[in-house]
Image (cartoon, rainbow, N blue to C red; front, side, top):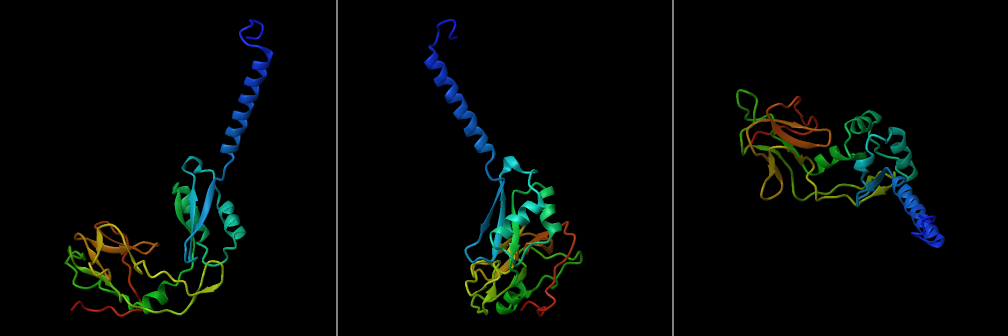
Length: 212
């Protein structure tokens, strides 16, 4: 184009400089972080958040190394669980959690009704009580994911969380069946009430009470 006198040599240099700048900018964007580690306000949970465009490129060792560099030393999820999340291309999952669930269950007097008043098919009916806990509770300080003792424990989440086909009661102290199904709980303590559950969760350390 210079030879054809459509642009001057100075304009050519300006265009090349701009193209080089855009190329470098694009390279920097591509070299951005593959994932981030987000820690909850109570420092009890670390979430792994993966860039959707870069999923499939992160390894287990990268995640473990990043959490270690952030000082996370307690409550790390098992290698098998993290690897399962990666292979399933899940872009947000728990990488570490200080699990004080059993103590929290006891402090809140969590009671399971999941094995009570079942149908002949082993199901809970719509509206049946699944679990119940006290709204007022107290628990001693616990160790967070940094290995430090803290009393900043979240009381906003239900000890067992609502999953598929369940709902919270109006007073927020119970989980009820939103439809007829078999109750089961996931590794993330999400309680579901579905037809095709593969397992049943029990609270072995807590009394199994009859519904009044």
